[in-house]
Image (cartoon, rainbow, N blue to C red; front, top):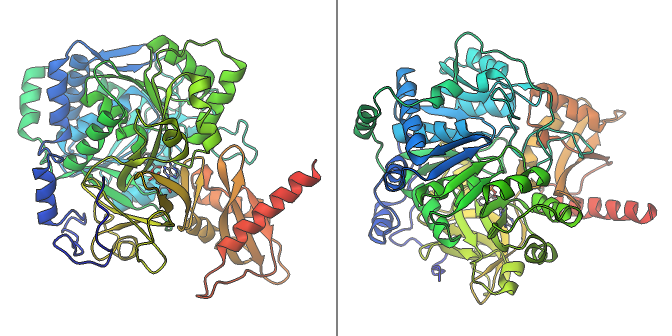
Length: 616
Ligand code: OOB
């Protein structure tokens, strides 16, 4: 069972706030790190090194499938090494950062592995991000390179990257996939699940459950100064053996940062989470054990691959580390996904609840596809309703695994051999015996076992702070290094957690996390707004959508379109656009003078219920 001893205020051997390194990352205290090594969690090997060791054992097994393209482990490694040397030729070195904004295509996998091999750090942006998010990431991570598709779903990513690079002196490499053209290789370029197709999406936001394909192919060419990422990733080095030796020589230290993940966002802009090779390898390997991965695994990656969940829980990294096959697909559309599951004999995949619901619905109307290969469906990222959980096995014929995780680290899984009641009614338990969890009340004191409270955690793959974010770290981490998840959970006597809610100012829109503060900041830039508060409103499809309460200035009126126009002009991801605006005369405050969001959530829920009522 995970350790639950101690209180957040305790200062034991592992209790002191670790100061940021000069680089701005915050790791674990030395004694704690030693314990993780002694327990075998940290292997002292870089991710690229672990992947190569596996590839050497199964050179002829299929590693990666993308449409018609199939690469064996030998071919994948050769492409990765070739790409790594070409990145070096472009001047990229260990600790340089690349903001990666690619749809689910094979180049994503080759590029990320090439970065891991070199010690170049990918910063995991999402395809739905726009100028606001991308320029912030470039600046905050001090990126030297940006990797983008050319034109995707009608949006010119290359032009955006160029504009950012022109303004930010640090970027000197722009990598463009697919020759800058959608579907250049003769099929849909696909799109991460978080893109912007308005299909079935009333407010026209990016719908994380909707299909990305169908957008007209883009026609951008490679601009002068851009590098063709597809070509860079497509061939082995001229001398593969020499390339390998050369890259082994520059392999990064296992304690170095492997990737920057983005936080779910409770502050204005996402924070960066520096995940080390040691911690992230453990994240992927241990997840793989818990999800029953092995050489016969065929993993379908259909959520945006830059998310921690499909990337390493166990995701594509976990699959490659055990010699399985990764299939990438740019759309979570059930018709397409079912066809791929049938064709590739997919055994496991990961979905957010909103997409799982669509798959269940689709199966009801179209039972044709052969899904018999599917053994495990992982669902996480947002709360899965118990009654939906219960449909998974009867309708899809596979086991359900609930995943309650976070980019900050801690992963909770239901186990494959748990009783149905645990699988359908809980969000599982920590994956590591050295994960520490505490459930506390508002004063930070542990609640009696079984009662709901805020979840705090520490552990071997949960870093002790965000990258260069002193102010946020003071709030999000306790002095003794516990991460405040902001999730309200109940710890059952059997050790499983049930997510009951949250006390963080975030909206979980079908698994995409939106900071209320960020939306409010844009609302305040809208003419006529005196006060603004963004809250989650319940939604049958996405779980939650964004509702904005506005107090206008005297005599002014503010519309939803006004606020959305401000955000679109600034260039934000579409999934952050509010979908409803409620004008009020004033906003209630709590005792400590903050806007009472609980009251607002109740208010919008009541309005929606009344509307449903009157609609019959
Ligand atoms: C995953 O990671 P993030 O960083 O996008 O979001 C983390 C937050 C959690 O703190 C929690 O509020 C929510 O997302 N969440 C869930 C949940 N899984 C995540 N809430 C209720 N039930 C669940 N099963 O979302 C993520 C990272 C790795 C694996 C899976 C999900």
